[in-house]
Image 1 (cartoon, helix red, strand yellow):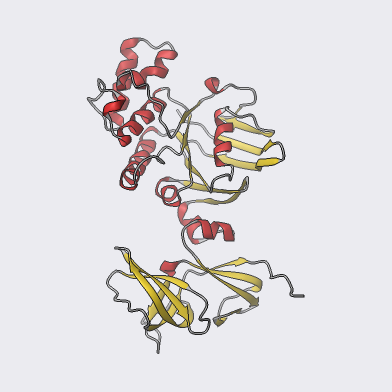
Image 2 (tube, one colour):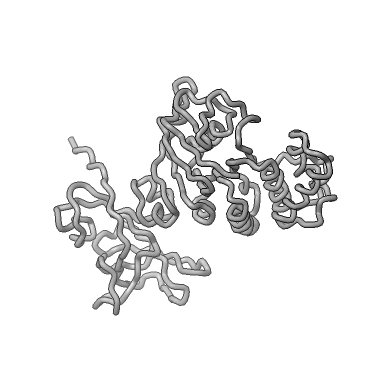
Length: 355
């Protein structure tokens, strides 16, 4: 079973502090949505409101078309999976997974059969007689997921479920979590502060900041076409170059660039969108923007690429980060011409006048 979710003008205040400020959002049935943002942005508060653990100051929550006002957590078509998993150490894995079904009055044979089926779904077939203390962190995460799915929620709420895992296991579990969601078709709402995790699993990312939705959309859209400077900076690394648009061009400390803009703007360039070529002449397929010659300050090898810091000759105090190809041999002190593509221009407040 699965359900659509609609949030309308949700506001949550704790005294003088506003945790959520008029949040409205529509989630499609069967969608995998990730609430992303820094600590204190309101994403966990929003998840707690969906689960019924917190009552909003104002606003409405509808799940499957039903108003959730006054509906207790146990009566909602939701299940929450927390970071600590909260497995019962004295119970076998089968009994852990079947616990919710037991509370709902399902017979012993039927609930154990269902539990074994779900353990197989999460890759733990035949492990039902084991206890949680004999499992790795990733295996406990799988058991917690199976237990959450056992009661067939229409919406599964996941609060930083992968946060306690190491990097390699977290990436493995991201793939498995997305595959399981595709198989069961349940609406997933997943909270994280990890940008890479969000991009790996989400059908749609909802980026939050200071209690509001800052940006939303598929990972590719949010990353390549951010709607705000906060979104551009939070979703990975970005070079920011302030400029003044004159209509057909953008005046910057690197010179006049052929970008149509008016007023104060910020030119945002991802490191992978900057290429280094010969100082004289353009590369065979030049990107759109010539940033001019720059001196390589330092470079670090990251396996898939070199992370290079350049100081443009036109603005020696400026640092531009570029990702050079794996096979490059960057030498600090060398000069190269920088070319940029996939530029994003965002409005930038004008500096305060000097007095």
